[in-house]
Length: 132
Image 1 (cartoon, rainbow, N blue to C red):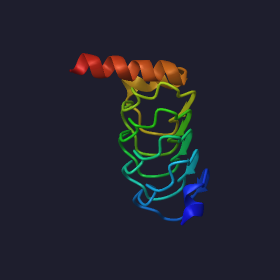
Image 2: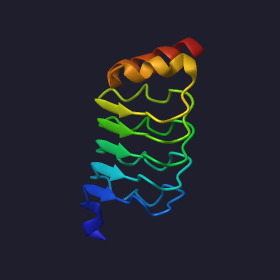
Image 3: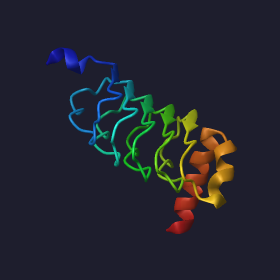
Image 4: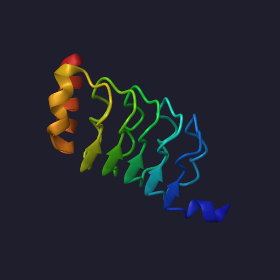
């Protein structure tokens, strides 16, 4: 069990995983790959403070959420999911690369796909503050 706490890279792609769970004891994790699974909701990632890379390509995610505590996140992939609206990224101040291509992004937000990750984070912050 102690060895799992030292784990820094975890790749669980192509496993038909439908729910993110059981990662609470892997706080040193820096890279998590969950691509090509059946995940529909982002959850149980709050206890991964050192996570820098998160790959969720080819899943069934429709909403970007549950990332608020991932302050060290630098690379994030949501390629080929069911995302229609860009949001939920306002706390990711260190994000350098964001890939959300091949989703169902609303037409009025498609232009954002050409922006840098930090410009999209800024857009999400402004969008959230104008909503409240």
